[in-house]
Length: 245
Ligand code: NDP
Image (cartoon, rainbow, N blue to C red; front, side):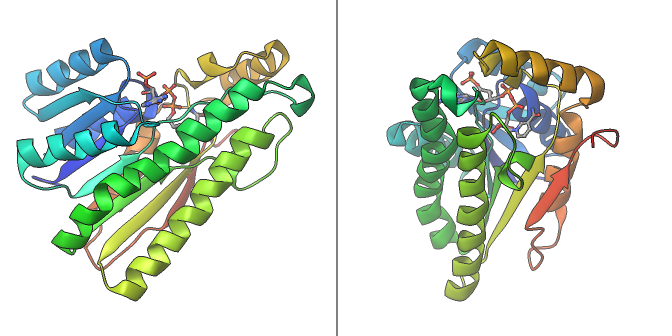
């Protein structure tokens, strides 16, 4: 981990924030992106106060130019990129019959297009370096169908397939790029704030109150995937509360 340059999208809260703190405490140089600049600044200040290295930039993952800019920031600041953690996401879940079509398109934009933009931004650097690691946050909703989760789950199924093809093609092309996909279950973050459908929000709130665990648990497995030797890929890990059925 020491000296690795790691870009984290969705770093302003939850899983991204917890991962940034843990990786920086282990000696990584973290490059933080999200839309809320005040939160990024506070996080970078915390990391630096604890003796770590962090830079940040406002990033909307739906914009290709923003993704290109954060890769440039990493290279200008630290000379290379070792890992990109594509973690930004939203979950305005609802029954399809509620026809929340704006939410559908927002989820596709952040959870799918955001991942594509991040990979498009970093791949030329990884190919030139002949090394790199892409880690993406899917969800247990990317493994199994849940009611109210047709679109959110669909975006996370996309991440699963996309990451697996990236892994296979990287191996076939010999680009030495490692891929890891994380499938979290109920993790206590700000994600439920993105749900606008009252019934779905109430159900999720009860589930998370009963079972939710700390985002530091996901940070721990992300660190584990990064810390494996370069010839070893931890391609998938599902992590959730022991008590969650
Ligand atoms: P949070 O809401 O705490 O974090 C989401 C992060 O994504 C925030 O930093 C937010 O920052 C960022 N984000 C949202 N939209 C954009 C955008 N357009 N551009 C850049 N950043 C954006 O929730 P989590 O930490 O839980 O979410 C992280 C990931 O984990 C998501 O992909 C989520 O789907 C996934 N996940 C979470 C689970 C859970 O139980 N918490 C379960 C399964 C998966 P900002 O608003 O400042 O842009």
